[in-house]
Image 1 (cartoon, rainbow, N blue to C red):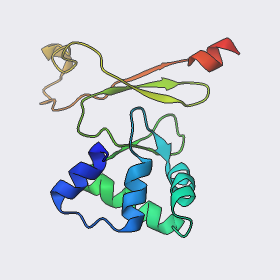
Image 2: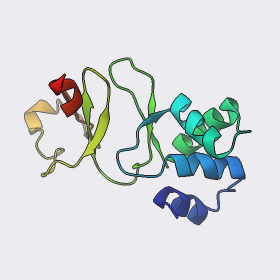
Image 3: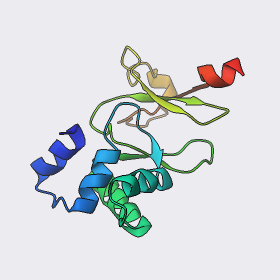
Image 4: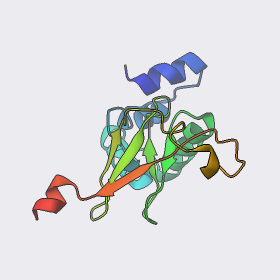
Length: 138
């Protein structure tokens, strides 16, 4: 069973066939699908699943804090199931591929006090940009 499915079961979230399929599609490392990609993959497993059900389920999972919406460069929102594992993103500036990365060190602590301008900083989101191997080669 996937980490996401285990977390949802632990919450007592009602796992209908449709919700289970959406959670199964989102399982894995470096998963950052758009809603349409989630729907297409879910429909391969459960052909009767509607686009509205997928969008509603994604919205519920975001509201629960079980997945994160990731937006980069005005592209379609993507959904990241690794909401409970601290990480940053590496994004290909050409094709939009997203990878989870885990930089060493405390990114929050690296912001000097004089650069906080009185803010009580609670979280850090860093996006590394570059070309993925496929785009760099071609």
